[in-house]
Image (cartoon, rainbow, N blue to C red; front, side, top):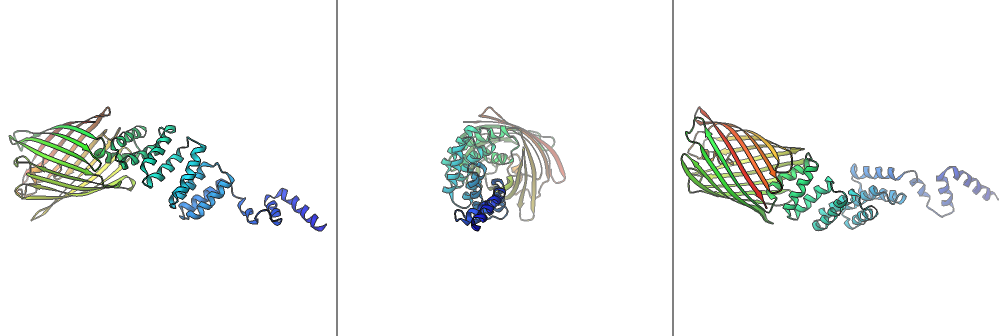
Length: 431
């Protein structure tokens, strides 16, 4: 009888205390007693604890455990299930992650974050075609998703489908022109995009003191994107000192990985009064975190002797802007000369829509206008400062026009300076 009264009293108090009810049934052996400790946390509280364990402590095992407990309480809580899938991704359990992502998508076909997490998983595991299918399915319901479009660009680049990647990137930049990571990718797509390009250009250089006759320079080029590299063949024509000349160039932009690509270039001319007989160049580019990029390389110009020029540059994308600082170092038998430049671009559209302003000191070997001054016969290093402006604009999806102007104040003899003005225009068609 006393045991009956005890149980009755315990049941009465359990009505007021849910935890006591659990203790009551645990005494009868139906449920484990430690379940009481779990009942105080809501799914949201368990989710928050799991996130802290994962992000602050890197304790993925306990974070997985808490996420599972939260899903027992709320099986259709999509954010927790996606988070659990990500935890499985980070702990090298892709099959378990796929199960969680698929379950969310089956319940909610329009859930953007599920497609992004699932597509990212397949991208990290080099399942690029599968990732593209998942992303494309998500974009049917979320056409302006910046995360999905950015991931699609990366997947298409990994598949070598650079033309599609460039189109997707330009669509993304129309949605958000100031998206920094998209801008960083657009810098790379400038060399990797479009299967074929044909371009023509012309420059006019006027001197106020140094020469009586202006210089004329023109070029025609063809670029082809292959799986291994972007390849460009170019013919440069020039008239300097009332003498005509022709130079032949070949440029390669091989893509090494998602982080690295390179630049290799070579040129030849038999008209050494107008162009160097041989020129060559190499640079290695790295796409770094936080939308930084770095470059290091060299240039070689061959006249009677060879001149080696070493270059390094750092670039940074920030919203609609690109900043680039570059330095050239030219050693010789008696001294080492240095030159540098700062270039800033403001993007107002896609990768080929921008205004640019540049300023520098010294002579750049990448500018064909002045490369004659690198002839080792010039034992005295002439001083120079310059300012340039440029406007590049895409017309439709296939045409690009580029206008540029520059002013250079150059020491053409020791302690004697003059100005030279350059105006240029170029046109390119992509197909």
